Image (cartoon, rainbow, N blue to C red; front, side, top):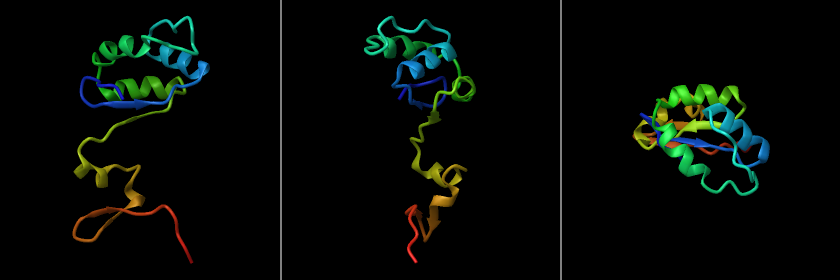
Amino acid sequence: MFDTADEPLAMAASTATGIEALCRAVGIAAPGQLRDPAGLGARLEPLLRTMPSRSWLARLHTAGVPAAVVRTDLTALPADPRLADHTAHHGCTVVTSPWRFS
């Protein structure tokens, strides 16, 4: 998880291809040793804080890097369109199971 100018982001780049795509998307050189990208997080942290999450998401998704805004305010979950089908309201918001039994 990395802070941006407004909201934190979670990114999934664990393969050499993913790390290269991530580095391309944010405009930095990929670490020489992709299997052990020591220091990559330290290089990303200050850079990602320079723009809002929506800007980074657009770049990351264009590069094929899975990424999403991290919701730190749980009251915002019902308004998240990705979760609309997975919440129910019974006096309070409840996350529903993705499984259905007949």
